Length: 311
Image 1 (cartoon, one colour):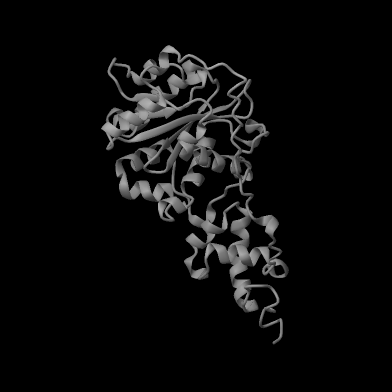
Image 2 (cartoon, one colour):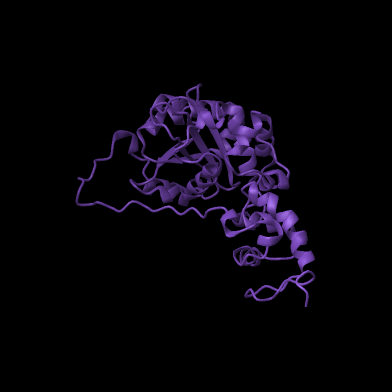
């Protein structure tokens, strides 16, 4: 058979007509350049008629190389986190500080066993420059799969408490107490103002704060996974302001693209799609705040997203 009509079947597991390969490449190439993964591409384009594994196989075997210049180098780097090795004998066990009393991870598990119906939100910070910022105070609405973040100029207990104060009117008091019924975070000193974060301006309780065990970031692993997605657009080691992240509007753009990306854990739906379907009240608050769904083929998960916005 002529290569011009049928792709030579010398590559293992490949049996594809050249015209078919060209049609696939026309869809795949621009989306790979926008930072989308093979999973996201085949999910958003069922007309391709292939699985995620097959697409990886085609790319890694060079099927689209001559046709569209697509190689394995175009695949989004798979990020894996290495947990730090424990040094139990190096450090003395720290005595729990006062703000941890009744708020440990064991207390958290106990509370959830007694109140399995409540919603949990996980909280953390993301930053590149610990001295000058900016600092992103991140919130993951666990059941919805949604990440929301607030642009902060300081990483202090007062600033993080203020971030919780800001989140309350974004959601409204009633929805805040529903969706942030429990707030799980780590033991960083910036989150040490537990009682202040738990208390609304009128003196009533608005949430319950709990803390992960030391060196156990995996206990809020769903948020850590969202941080990996954030890093596709906001890489470590970069000056975030020079990258174009200068305020909340730019951060909302980043969040819009991340929350519009389909997730395997959500049945191939995006967090925004799931939230619109399951939690309409929360979805409307996100829209009002400035987080919007992005057209599937317009999703960009690379640093040039912010540069493009500022042109």
